[in-house]
Length: 162
Image (cartoon, rainbow, N blue to C red; front, side, top):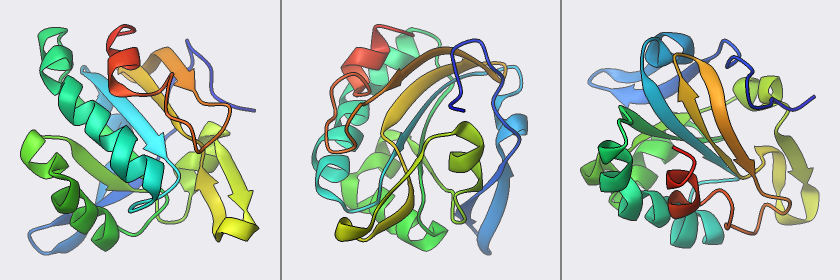
């Protein structure tokens, strides 16, 4: 069953590249006492993700900061090396958006947000969605019906929910 507004985030350790290589990030610890915007998408370097979803959050970053959002996090079922490179490629790193890898889709499956599309080579990937999380609790959630579309989960739409 998919996560809903009012639910607590599932416990998960995601990955990022640190000074010494891949390092785990406990999402629960990251969310504790903080207001986060988390957006998830099917894959790094894919069309809609690269050309629409990530840029929409870069453009809305100042608006989220003004609304008291402590951090914006992008999650994808990719390895941390790809996520790190993609963050730099899109300019999200310079914008202050955190990219975290859900390499084994553990978080994505715990959220009930996985999908598989073999013709596109997408296996156990994340649906496209965004949420506002306060102290680990989902206070707003916007999920796309189609992973190739970015309307309700884009930065400006989620800014209205924050």
